[in-house]
Length: 323
Image (cartoon, rainbow, N blue to C red):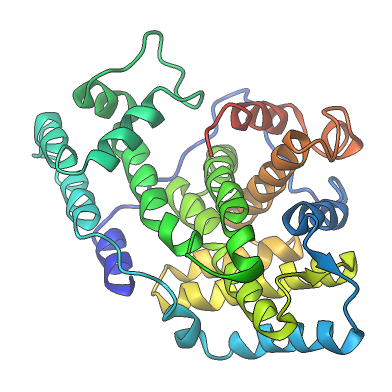
């Protein structure tokens, strides 16, 4: 994984979007959306019925072990499966301006899963083609270089999040991946409005949840009943500590320092334009999931007062994305 990240990022110029003149600009969410309430509801959604009234000692042990693991990210990184070689080869081709659309399509055609992913993406609500896209050539032309890079990053990260686990982690993994995909898309959209690097925002949105998967694995080992503590206060703290774990894993994998910094700063409501894009994308993705699950309404204060018009449009885009 570490070598793949190096190949993915080496030799590329930063692709930073400039906000369109007159476009609505997302805020920094300082004192806006109640991220604490959102995280509490999000933890409730993740946990579902698999909760129990855990002793305080059990909660403390889980949280302490998450923090301890953050001091040894190499152990957590060992949990990550290998990335198929086709993906870094495609990413290298995307950096080569002499490679034609037909050559890219030929490489993609080697993997039927990637073919399906590219066509599904090109026909999604994100791109809204006027007519259905049926060929790889047309899909590649529509999505462009950056769109393909973000899609391939999501395909590569899917097995990282959706590990075949036992216990509660097995139940939570597909739910977490649902958030990861939506957060990556939302963060990249927010990046275009705060002059952050779009691809780095996508990567930050994807890797932010890696620590959460590891955290739930630790909880499984400690609780040993396929459940997690019911307490929302515990859930909020678990999410916070898992973000810190994700940040150190990102550093271990040689991600750009800005990505790991953004993960930490987004949780604290401070930092660069990249951390702003990630914080906003994370909030929007969680709200989308909570609305779809019926835990909040479309007109909840978290939406009507916490998001501006630009962010609400992003929220709407996520409603039609397949998880």
